[in-house]
Length: 310
Ligand SMILES: *[C@@H]1O[C@H](CO)[C@@H](O)[C@H](O)[C@H]1NC(C)=O
Ligand SMILES: *[C@@H]1O[C@H](CO)[C@@H](O)[C@H](O)[C@H]1NC(C)=O
Ligand SMILES: *[C@@H]1O[C@H](CO)[C@@H](O)[C@H](O)[C@H]1NC(C)=O
Ligand SMILES: CC(=O)N[C@H]1CO[C@H](CO)[C@@H](O)[C@@H]1O
Image (cartoon, helix red, strand yellow):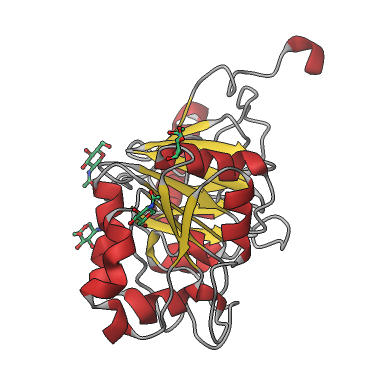
């Protein structure tokens, strides 16, 4: 009698629960990314170095120079996101690259897509093995270069095994979805420009994330585009991408928004995690991430917390 009442109660509760959550069958799974999405993938050839703004560390610049092929590699710097009336060959990132040993650094700039669509303009890109996009507003890069020979020549650098790098706006432009692409206001996450150059496919990239407390902002994009991977990068911190492998380098942390969760310590039922669609987690320099699996790559750096740190 009692047991059949309990059974009925259990069935009633089960029914209630399943009715209340018709679309989230595994709402308490800790580490499963939902698989209703396309994979996020990096470039087939070459590398990306995606910097979250305020680039200071020589080690990040040096990584860019090395991946371009060393000091004599031709590196083209694109300052266009900055919005200044004009640029000369002494744009700050250019000066720093030269100070760190790069011997052949060229500034290339136009706001005019008709100019960007000429063979003359793209000539330096044809023999370049590195590109660096400076900061500013990412939509300016779209207005100047999207759909032109220049955009194709950027891709050509990657296809030949070179490196595309960039900081702040120069980071966001690398996503297929252009985060903060609005021409009026940089707080609008889904603006009047939403298509980036897409070196990282099925992804949206935000920057300055911890310094500016932007860690909830990517959810505007991810709610409307649940198939995307969200990536948030803090200042003076970078993702180095080769194929689907990502390594965090630099000074602080990168945030991953994949509906999963990961921790250096053993996951416990005591953790009070939000629903999968409201989650993110942090990786530090040395940690690696697999874009195709949307999972952290376990490694020495990502190993568990040792007993004396408990
Ligand atoms: C760079 O070029 C200079 C002059 O052409 C040459 O002397 C030097 O050995 C080259 N350096 C490297 C690392 O290839
Ligand atoms: C420097 O790079 C440009 C292309 O960006 C190339 O045309 C030129 O030959 C390079 N100069 C040297 C000295 O390697
Ligand atoms: C997957 O990719 C296809 C083709 O690029 C696209 O049409 C579709 O919207 C994508 N689906 C998701 C869930 O992102
Ligand atoms: C529909 C869909 O995107 N399915 C993917 C699920 O995940 C596997 C492994 O990552 C992919 O190969 C499928 O394409």
